[in-house]
Image (cartoon, rainbow, N blue to C red; front, side, top):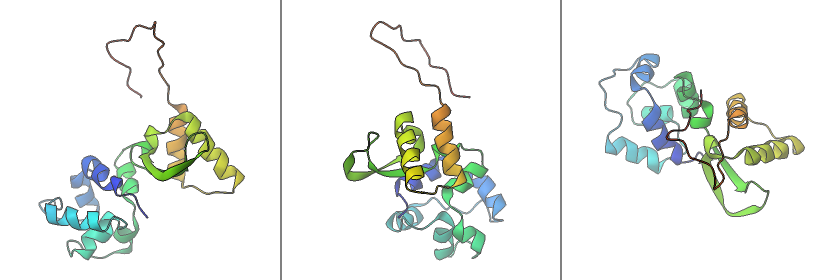
Length: 160
C-alpha cells in the first residue's frame, strides 16, 4: 500500500507546469480542487496518473498509469530522500514497533539507514535505484551536533 502522506508532499513539491508539458495537458485545468484531492485521498494506493485517468481528466496511457509520484518529482529535480517514503516495522535499533512507521527517507537517522541496508543485504532484499540513492544521500549528509557548552550559530549551513 502506498503511504497517504505522499499525496500532500507531492502536491506541495510538483511543478504542475512541467507535468502538464510532459503529459501534454492543458495547464489551465484545475487538478487541485477538493473533489479531486478527496478522491485521491480516499484511494491512496492509486498513483497520480491513475487518479487523473480514472477521473477522466487525462487520456489513458501506460506511462501515465504506472509512474510513481516520487519518480516525477525526481525528474523535476527534487532529491529522492525528500520525496520517497519508507515504512518501517522496526526502529533504528532493530526493535519491533507497536505500529508501522512511515516517514520520508530524509528524516531517518544514519544508524537507521545502515540497519535497513544491513537487513536488506542479510535477507536478499531489493530496493529501487532511487531509494538506494536516497539512502546514500542520508549517509553522506553532514550531521551537526552541539553539546551543552556549544554556542549555537545564528544559522545552520544548508546542504549542497
